[in-house]
View 1: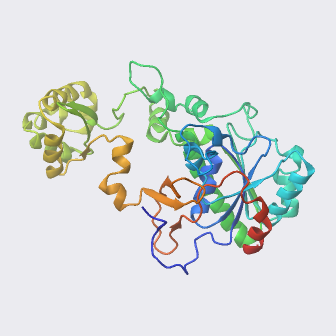
View 2: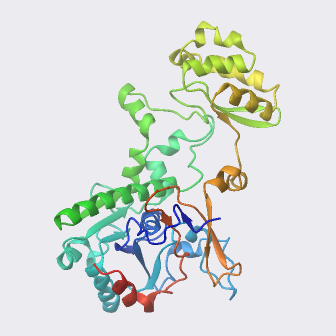
View 3: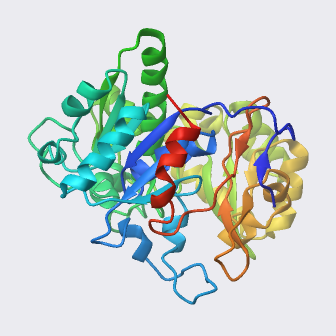
Length: 404
């Protein structure tokens, strides 16, 4: 377990040290973006509504982190995207809450919000209003469908974005129903696009003193990462279909059954294919003219996958892995979450981290680590996910410690 990811030089400032982020977001997309910035040492002030008990995901459980007082607003879902943040309680519908948020915005470099388009205008907290008090402000609005377009006023959740944006039509068994990805990937990827856009706009602001508004939609970002399946359609005019674990442009590249489970096979080129055939004792497949090139293997997908399935059905998982790894053929097991997060690789790469938290029964909170490995300004796990409103009284101190 680790508290930081990189050099043990406590004097090295984080990449975003001195940057203040006003976080008006909740659920997952916005919090993912602001957590990334908090990991890079930005001061993230998360505004939470006292009328609702804070971020919606605080109650998206069980499971919850066990606390010493027996009451917990730290659901496993909430802690996934809210470390390195300070929780401040404020009711935006009141003049007091609006004044508090404006005072933070005046000192902040970045605002992230995910209200319905136009939803913050009635509180005087939209971009035009806050730009008046802070011209260099980078203001990112995240919504389901964006600030424009015929669907701008429709609410948006990850599942809806995966459905509307085409991802569910590509996911699942070919003979089964459309299927979402197992985690909120549309939210997470939207949060990552947000972080990239925010940091680009921040650089512009620092260079020119000019802030800007970023309009980002779950559906837009989800369609952007249709990647090769999206361009397959644009090039061919044919709508892609579900292939289960198969790949539309590479064969063999899928999951195959063996005597004691399943194995992943990912043959990326013709040389690897011939090496694969030799490794499993099927030189006949490597010499078959139907399978000589990847385009031919795509044409004869069913025949080659059937032949591989028949061979693997007589072999164990470990037997196949040893042969293919020795031959340099990409392959691997299918781990459960527990196997993945406790693997030697996960331990070596700090995939799981522990952050001290006195209010919990264990004295720590276990979280998924940030994959960024920065040699000079490493990720720092400085603060566990906050209890609701715990930093409200410290706001002046926070702003004073990180002046603009």
